[in-house]
Length: 325
Ligand code: ASP
Image 1 (cartoon, protein in one colour):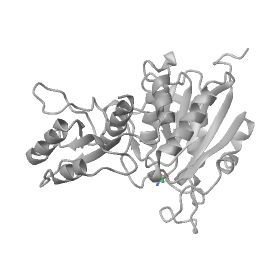
Image 2 (cartoon, helix red, strand yellow):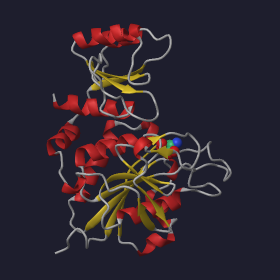
Image 3 (cartoon, rainbow, N blue to C red):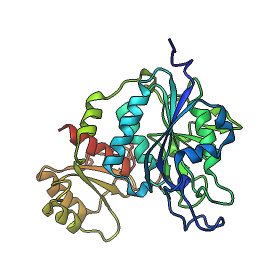
């Protein structure tokens, strides 16, 4: 019988992104088309992976800005199924950088895997003069094979980020992620891991949110949760328009996440409309639009806060919560 620590087979799942992008000129790092190169070809670009026992699957081939529920469902289904295989030590997912933090959050929330699920990516297409994808993929494999690794992480530019903390903070540089106040979990240096913090607590129990998983897999759409910003000069008209309009695909508005200023403060005119939304049964949550830190809860705050989640993660968390209702 193979136990988890002895298992050494890895699964590599491809979903597209810049790491699989193709440009017409090798010196073009921005005018490329994402999601073109097969994940098997990406693996073949890393000679060191030739000696690893790998199962390779193309789950999707998209630009991650276009992420949709159907792709998430296909990915979650494949990840959950491979995690259940005793001989599988871990899973590597190639993904676009643009929504990688949302996919990582989704997988961590639903699966809390005791094995590592490592998302990786690139900022330069596969055809670039100096592509960053092969090194990131090689580092991701090193993380997925580490005997202590667990939970969902993002590996890019030699750093390992936890799924709950990571955000994309830069549109161009090859190290575009940040984990805010907590910092990265660790780094990968010449294939060796140097950890700054323990692997995320609790994940080693391997608890699966089976009910949540089944609800997501069975959903034809996620409950409609919109994201609005509080900013200078904002009024409540966008929120009122949302309340009046029912989307043919996702149905009526169920929730709003407001990216508030500073410590989750909201313009007084927008707040009036958000209170109207609450009266009409819409769940409203406030996150901070600041790139770092979290809303510090305090007595008398007018709206519930996102418990430290960024606006995009809070939106997904609320949609998953409303899926239960
Ligand atoms: N620009 C994106 C990336 O860096 C494309 C995507 O997210 O798929 O991967």
